[in-house]
Image 1 (cartoon, rainbow, N blue to C red):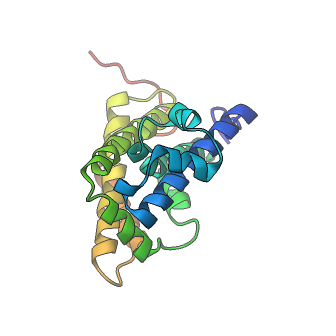
Image 2 (image 1 turned 30 degrees about the vertical axis):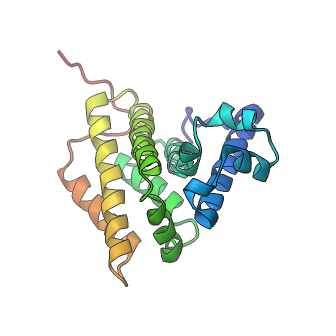
Image 3 (image 1 turned 45 degrees about the horizontal axis):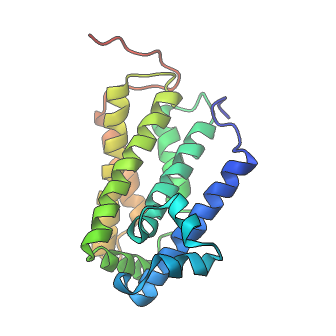
Length: 209
């Protein structure tokens, strides 16, 4: 484990758990009732907290619905930083991503189809794109740490490439019956690794003009 992967404190774990519970409730209610039929008060009541507590974590029900995107990336970050320090960077990234996307095997196709249907709501779609922008930032910062302060521009390029590979593999899996998400993702990672500029774990920051 790397030195930067220290366990979360009790307060932070509780905050994450509360945020996840609210996000799960928002997504579940939206899938059951439709986004337009869900209020912040409904989400808060589902978890047993006040609307004010909800507002401490999310600015809208749409943000709560899309929170799973950021939560998963936070777990990717934690796993990446916890991987052995001498593990090659691309292997560490690949393993951290696969650990989160395939914890319980291939994703459930029918559930994902329902999530995609939620994206027809323009407000949810906007929050979804914002969540993915946050995801890229989270992975970029993790890569900067993992590389010992490596070139931030290359770390951002790598983070964007990884997220693009996940989206392409996911879309291919969703739209093609019988396609394997994990096989497509691994293939895309192979292609990226072969063509990306070199970044290694523990490298020194590159001087830029």
